[in-house]
Length: 258
Image (tube, rainbow, N blue to C red):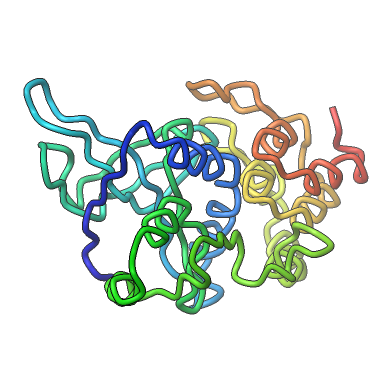
């Protein structure tokens, strides 16, 4: 990936505030993408990133708005390495691992086959550019941002016409059944913080896989036990918190509601 240049926008810009709000409300689409990219099932799934503010130390000028690659997400915190270098202050340099609360995310961006999804603040920046500058900007990123000012949550909006379900989730149904047949404990196993595969698929918005897990004995009442604000949450709690209504419906259909 091309090294990214930090870009600042006026902190009091109402359009910027609205872009950040919209990004946080739709972050679930970014995390769903990451969850599938980590499985390595589609080489066209590009990296995903979020943008966040990094204030300078006392006496340093400005606030840096840096991009961070999304490597993990626990329902509250996004973690991964910084992707671009700070310009004005001693904010973390490129490659430094950081953690960012979802509440502090300013933007998110991912790509599929070179087409950008998200980029709420990026589109604001592109709107302020002339055509030639915009082309240069897009070449630097190496991505197709589509129509200026238009945000795509997924690479093909028709995918969401009737359902939020990801095609890869549907396609993965038989494979998950095979995995569970070979190792039934997959459906019920929990890590030291109480995370099960059911929790993971609920956060990622994969209703089809949630249904398969419930069919094979996954406990819908299993609760997270680790530190943090999500302690005690069920998989359904996570789905509701992320805004995955179709996943919440899957729990109801399979008798996994509270």
